[in-house]
Image (tube, rainbow over all chains, first blue to last red; front, side, top):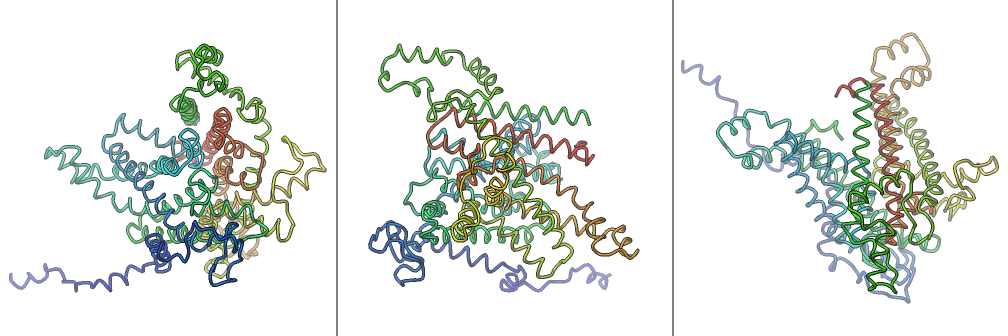
Length: 294
Length: 321
């Protein structure tokens, strides 16, 4: 008998080192580097930026880029340094998008969990509302909200959150529907665990992967929406360092100062691309099943 | 099929009513329209305020007011625009053709560019051409529309001066006369392209994967074995079958284009419903905003409805669900 026991012992795997795991993950280094630079610029804007983004320097107004070492990316009509405004723009972007997307995730997750787990009328009511929000282009919904609440950063943040939560709710509900009849949930119910506890302890941990993937895929969309709203003049005041506003200011100097519009837009494009690539990677890494859904 | 259509129309009507309720309700939530409309000289005169209230029907119960709003909305009657001092209905009738023209041109461009690129990158899979198409798609999804629009204006209108940068030229209304057509098209090119850009990327991806699937099928291989030329096989046998889902998607995106045009209309000063909406938003012009949003919303719901029904005809699985 003793001779048979080794067959039951699983082959022991060598512990995988962290370095090896990082290597196996095939991390997308270019997008990650770009995103780290953006976060760094946002965090230490006052140290990184060569000038005050709001300081006028009228003697050096409308300087072309790469002409002087003092203003590498040129200046605008009041002599504000473009590079500094771009760097502070990263901070503005994070300050506006991060809170709104967090609120959207919280609201969407709660609605999705409740809707998926409770079923019946609560589910149909919540999903009708979700579909109605999803059914309209976000910019229309955002404009409606800004009309009645007025322009300003806070209202833009509310508008972004109000248009984005629905995607999270839909996705989380789908995940919950897929797992709520699995054995561990049914057993917990039989054992008498309260519904709140089941949602918190058994359902929520199982949707975290989906949540992370959806978040990283949505961030790019949110940045574009925020930039569009700033561009349309609904968010921050003119003169504030936001990328969308910079492009809008450049619009007035199309022929004289092309650089004012060019650089901020380029930065937005690169950042959104980086988020999209990172999101694609995360989706493939965490959950290959989702590959087709995108 | 009939039950599917009836159910789908029912859903459309419900969403439309929900939209009208939100639009109407938000005016009441954010303040008293009667007080808002009061001339400054009569601000503290309660009798003028009461008269104003009665004149606009604002003294009636909420539900009655809402019903009146609905009845008028059907006739595009949203009252007077505060800034333009004329009926919103008049402005809408001027603006709708411009937006519809732009959306149609955008869809044509998106399909006209996206489909061939998708087919080419499927046929020339993993070549430099395929990669260039992919980069174009990634860029198209990430670049902000307003920025691309401005860059195109700088290059094509400013630097080279080939195309007009703003407006619709001397076009008004639905149908151009023969002499207006070249001018109309010149004004359409840039805005329609910007509008199409994001969808081109999606259509390209879709066409590429559909095409790859079809190229792998038996009848395509059989056609090749029969000795038919590549061109006939690709464009006649494969592409025709691959394009059904792509065209459907084009229809759906037409619905999106009708609304996605706010930013594009603003940059190109295109006199459409989107520009009208933003003008209204920035000047607290509630009737104008209500009119523009209700019309865009209804157009969106209607287009999505038609596409869904057509899709139900094409694919039985959809209507069974």
